[in-house]
Length: 207
Image (cartoon, rainbow, N blue to C red; front, side):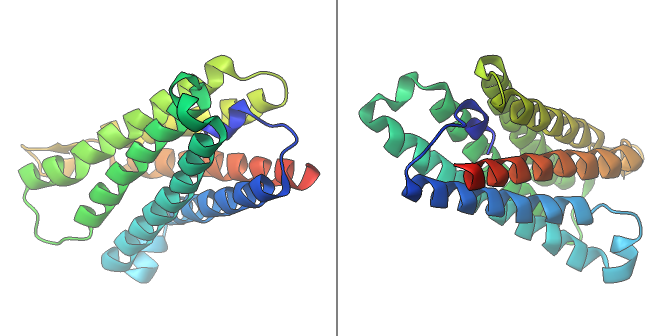
């Protein structure tokens, strides 16, 4: 989705279908990350079910990112290495894999503080960093109508980064650095990505 901010233009019907699938995948994933930290949701469904929602969201992110990377690779053939949209998509894809790892590990109970930071915090931080780098690449070269999508995605990546940093588990207390910041920045970041997905879906309809 992030890399698509670089190339909103008329596309063949097959690529339009891919774009819609990508947009829907990111939309569903974003909804999961928006609902997961929402006030009262964890109390309603329980910690375990809440963790599953996040993991499901990360899977949808990876599925959509895989389609996007595949599209960017096919579009450029063997010359994909010099295309910013390919680099943006590939770095984003790595980020989604790291989110798979951290959200899967977060479903495990009984983790120690050091295990929390190693298995959950670290991949979350690196995954968010990948999203941020991917978004910066897209934003730097975007123009016109695509600039709005790039800006929204960049905002989402920054918010995910804030969430990752705030999720560090302080050894002395065994608690997250700032749980409130984790929740609101995750929800707002997911909302930004949802808006970006809707923008991509809308652009595919107009093609």
